[in-house]
Length: 119
Image 1 (spheres, helix red, strand yellow):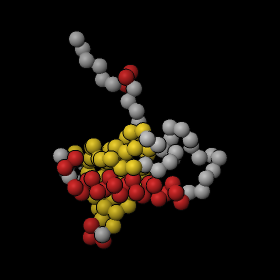
Image 2 (cartoon, one colour):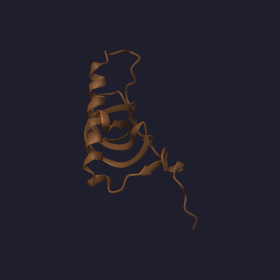
Image 3 (cartoon, one colour):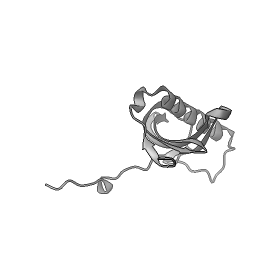
């Protein structure tokens, strides 16, 4: 169905998806290095507390829009700590273009938010 998100299968073996994950990390790192330091910049658990090193994409969905929009769950290292980030990348192959729309820490699932099993 056009416009609907679909799960990308076998993400870890999908070279294109892994390359998009690397691209999203590189673009994020460029953006934070180009942003001048500010006392208002978030510190600590926010998404802008330093560059990240790509590990792998662990989940992905694609959506056909004006191009293909990819929703990626990216594993990366930041400050020596393994973290998960959400990234959104739009690819327009007919103009050889890709653009990072969003990159930030994935929401942490709290134990109380996880679905419970009935026993």
